[in-house]
Image 1 (cartoon, rainbow, N blue to C red):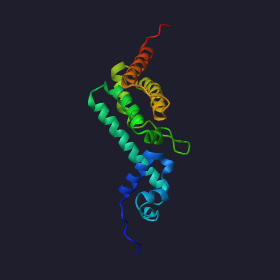
Image 2 (image 1 turned 90 degrees about the vertical axis):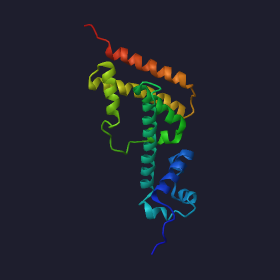
Image 3 (image 1 turned 120 degrees about the vertical axis):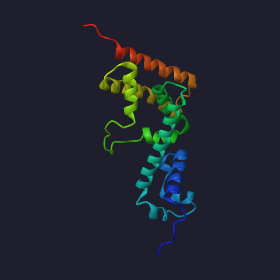
Image 4 (image 1 turned 90 degrees about the horizontal axis):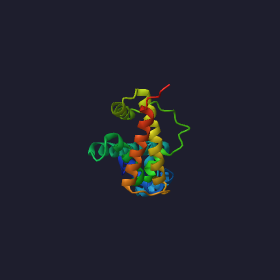
Length: 189
């Protein structure tokens, strides 16, 4: 009979998440994870089939943390709700650089393409309500705004630039207002 595991699946995931925060997902090897847990790597494989399964659990844990950022910032009332989602995305990139990279900067070419993620639905509805745009137009509006927000977040996550929060806030307002003007302007033919 194999020896009883000294740690839980959740403890392994938490250790792997902490290692990812410190050195990126590439630092999470079976050997390093075992050492982090004060063990060999063998007990890890009594809880997980392979390291890919551990990595998937880390991605899920990182996404849960990101969703907490979104919820907290969108409910805080410091910014309008749609803007708060962008500010949360950028704050996550600043606070959790390696987790941000894992979620939003990893190679996804081997992953199946996602349909419209469920978390976009409330954001699309906010844009529709605030602008009067159709669902398709609001979706395109959001995609363009997200590219802008992602660029700022990426520069922060990679330490390319550091900006003050009031500057970031103003930039998001400017981007939003510019898109709103363009999308909502009635063209005369």
